[in-house]
Image 1 (tube, rainbow, N blue to C red):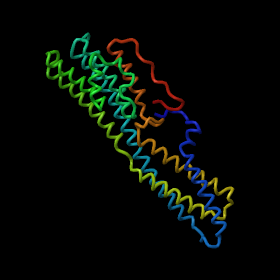
Image 2: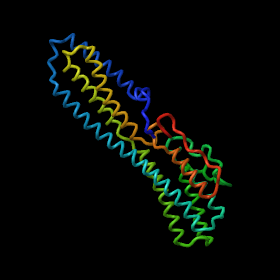
Image 3: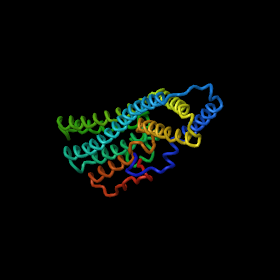
Image 4: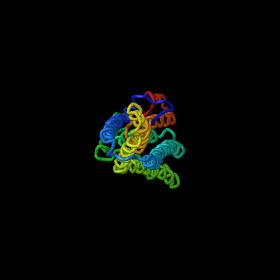
Length: 296
């Protein structure tokens, strides 16, 4: 997730360097053609590139809005995961003996679930470096499942059902805990939906095509302008369009393991600190440190 810091110029330039190279070549070719065939190419009124530029602005506004909606939905989902992770711990402590070993087991699994879900959404090993959070045969059980985060929730759900079978909680308490577990499953499903639903690729292709057509028509319209001024001007205009388009493209996938990603590791670390302190553990991890201008 981007922080309230100015990204370095190299990061901004790397997002559009290929597009700017293509624009430079396109602008140079059009400039040379308009000079070589000056009498064959008719005058291009500025109203045509103006209309195209307006259309591009509207399309970019729509894409930015839709992309930000996806990013903000992902952030709200992980905010809800924080809340219900805390709720689960507090409910267990409220409903049964605070010293019951099951509380520590369920809380550790919940911490592992937060890390595993984030890693899974980023396409990494969900159970990497999480052995310390599992007891007994839990790891063997998880290895039988393709969806590791779902399997972790199933283990916790079994323990909660056992509490009801042993008479340690009543029906009302069981319903409350079950509602929290249902919420966690729903948050995982919503995250997986965002991850698996791609923004139409053709939208980006057509937008790039329109930008290049805009550059070509604007270059023809500026045929009487010196090339030393025309080509840099086209590069600056195109740079703004492509930067906005790239920003929207990165925002549309909030689980892509990029600087614009939802800070799932930092959120999971915060959850771990909160939950371990709630059950009286002292050796908690330090907060996730930012990397230059973003945090993961």
